[in-house]
Image (cartoon, rainbow, N blue to C red; front, side, top):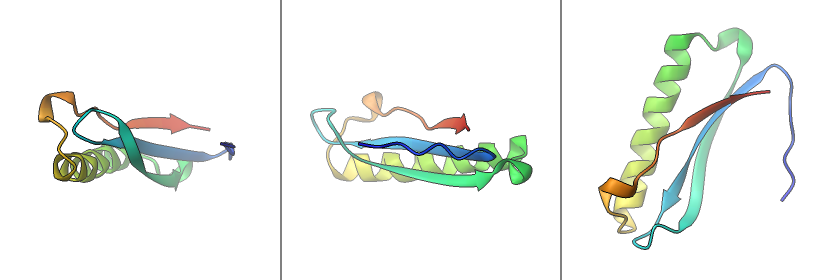
Length: 74
């Protein structure tokens, strides 16, 4: 898989897991760094975490194994 690095962009993403804890997908969102206040990035993390937790729960992942979104600036 190729990864593209784009300067001036922050990406927040988290994995979607199944009942075995296997990563079966992911959700991410990006924003320009000029719009990435601490509050904005925190909101992005909260929304990504909520979405991946809900989807992981649908696929049977126990809630104790659900990870959290990470922000990466490039």
